[in-house]
Image (cartoon, rainbow, N blue to C red; front, side, top):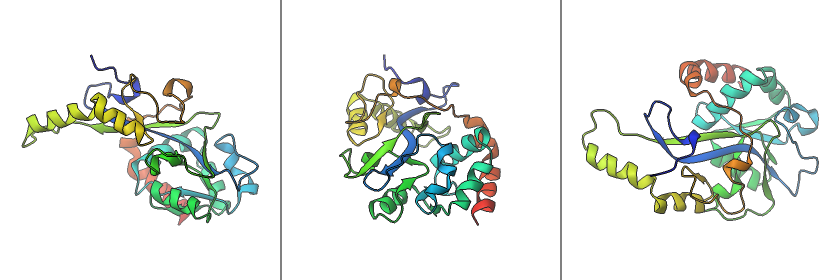
Length: 219
């Protein structure tokens, strides 16, 4: 029997995740000496002009983070980031690139840098796991009702959670959905991390509102 992490499956059986993205605070370790340890630390003026984060209108992962942090920390958290002159880019690849270039040195939300370098260590970049917890965001696989080739879709979905495919995902720097696959090299196991709960129903219901509120703050 395939053993899937509890956060990698829909409670109603609608999908199973093929991978799990861990979202924390990436930093340039060679340039950030006073390292933030919590999400709330990012509000401090000492980080003014140092941060970058993606736009929730372009990446679902950031939409999840904005939805949950605005609920737990309030929209004042994002207003403080705006006051700290945070740079907004489209997606996580741009967050990584901006930090690689040294234009900004703290990702106010980002994936492990190794996930952008085929799982290899990235010089001078490291991941901070905030004490309040990180986010786990699933990349689901499902067979759409009425699909033209449901049998082929089923085979693809089965392959994506096979040991071969799951190990390839982990070797690329992203956590696999299967609990019998080792974590990506150099990264902690899911069982060793604290997670902030994600309410996907809330994100689905309030997605447009969240994007609009974010845009109003950072326009």
